[in-house]
Image (cartoon, rainbow, N blue to C red; front, top):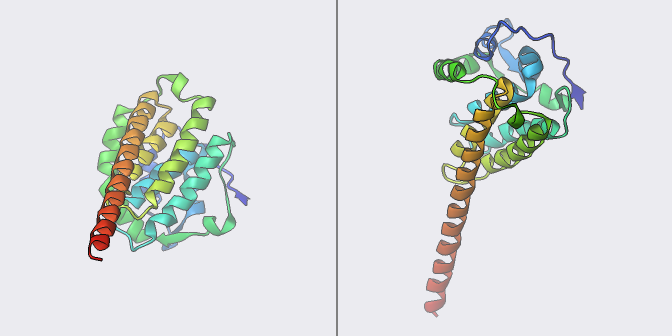
Length: 212
């Protein structure tokens, strides 16, 4: 495991500004290490938010799992109350095209800036250390759900993870509540999908049994 040392945060720079700035650099590849260092002390929530948003774009089969693994690790560290982000060196070396990142981020930034203006630190009881443990555990479950081969099953947990990431960054208890509602919706959707699959399998088996 490797610890990412975060530089002193720039309080005058919003999260969306940092996100946009990561799209510009001399290296054509953008690594996960560079992202985490760029986010500074906001690393936990920022990386969860960024990876969740990136996962919402179309990717080849198995692509969602690439985003789920670091989210699970970071959410686990959040639940364990770590002060700084720790990730395996091979994950920190994970990189992709900066140009692709820049194109994707430009689609996200306008709406993200709108949401940023609506969020602020509030309801501290929902954003303290105990709440971080609960949010971390929930984010692990959502990331696992996002990796499942379920029709449209990645969008709902991806959006909910993004909400939790924003809640962590802004220390916004209202966003935590929104994330909990999103988690409940994800759970209901997964149960409905599971019930549908079981019903289809049962009916198909019964149909084959009646043929003989």
